[in-house]
Amino acid sequence: MIRDHWLSAGAAIMLERMDRPALAAFLRRRREAIRPADVGLPPGVRRRTPGLRREEVAGLAVMSVDYYNRLERGQSPQPSPSMLTALARALRLTRDERDYLFRVAGHPAPADHTRLAHVRPGLLHLLDRLTDTPALITTDLGEILAQNDLAIAVLGDLARGGGPEASWVYRWFTEPSVRGVFVADDHDTIGAALVADLRAVHAARGGDPVATAVVERLRARSADFARLWDRHDVRVKQLRHKRVAHPAVGVLDLDVELLDSDGRRLLLLTAAPGSETARKLDLLRVIGHQDLTVG
Image (cartoon, rainbow, N blue to C red; front, side, top):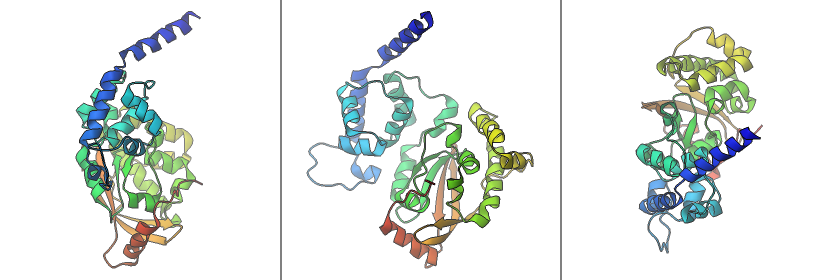
């Protein structure tokens, strides 16, 4: 009972640290400062207020409109760190702004090794402009932070919450549906490349807790991963060609271009101009999104 009382008191202290008026004002000002074009939305008509509408922010952050309205009115319960991260991305916050958002919401700013989950507004702006090429932003561990519409149409909606289980290499060895996105003959090659890249990233991060957790959990769950890890192959994203097995348009032959900046990776999946794959991508822009990761 004493322990339960201590936990309740601790929770109350955390809630008291939440500055609801400051949080509400900050969200409102940041929402009003963003133009629809900045987040890839059409300008629309009859906008009575500057910036985005509340329902547009809620949609970008994948939360209910009612909950977001309560945040801006200063009447919400304390938002979780994952919800704050989603809001930071939706509102295109800088790192300093994101840290402030966490603090006025009653949470400490994310630790250094988790800051890679933040995507700079300029990088998200670039992603929004890539409408004819599948593109996605990941951390160096392969946690998918953002995808453009065509990447979702090609690969499915791959974004997931943080933690070791969100990394692409972890999901590759533990979720058969993830492998099913790609041509079966390429699975061994892709798996070996992912493990070699993870070894390079693990060393570059100095064996931080997140990277170490990915390795330890995979060794415990996948004999295939453990075998490849013990080979000590080291390569940083050397796989430059991938074949996607799309259920609607068939095989897509895609070249992979990688831009790496401060631990964020922008991946572009390109097709040769005039090729059959280029024509299929044009078709997918019309077909739209398909969730291919559900088994």
